[in-house]
Image 1 (tube, rainbow, N blue to C red):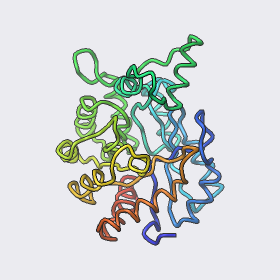
Image 2: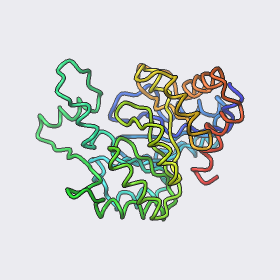
Image 3: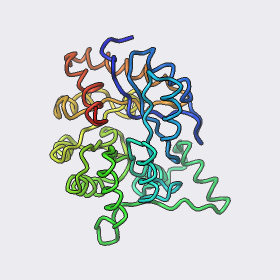
Length: 295
């Protein structure tokens, strides 16, 4: 156990049960988190609210704070105020904006390259399409480039329940509009999802602009560990934004990867090797997450 992980949270974990194949389930995570000295993890599903799962894990494993979330893809009705309200009432702490059902993400994945390896969610979409089952795209802006009314209502609900808004895979145009409106509507906790990921890549200048609205930048283990980007790029961004504006997550749970607690430990080791101080690492794996969670 790395002592710097004591009390830390991984706010981006893909665990089973899920539609997609996963390395581990929530029961296994409930055991692993306290063994690693960590405080908790957020359960991310592309398709379902996980608040109920999180509540059960907290009861089964009192030393593991499982955090419920909801992702606003087609399976929950997209920007569906009712779904977000129910998630908030059920104790969900984090609202992910659309991932696989956002037009920007779909255009990147379905780019016409016949040799491109498709993610599991894309294969599910193809299967559903063959069966005549629709999974419409979910976008934040209308044809005039304005935020849709339902998006604004969702932001108000997030603010009311003091939940965390995570931008997920929406386009940059959507992201800036959403973050500015969220700030205006009283959303206190905003995460710009894996800022160095290929489909969501934000420049340092863009990140600094988003930070003006109180947003923190998320860096995930899988992005550099799977060679989507060189670690030096992530490190440059982290140094430029400063530890107060960054959180470290893993985005782990894939069958071929390591466990999330192992990913957090490896990220901490990489940061220390790169000369980041222990105090600054603690900010990015413990303090900033606790602040987002209202602790």
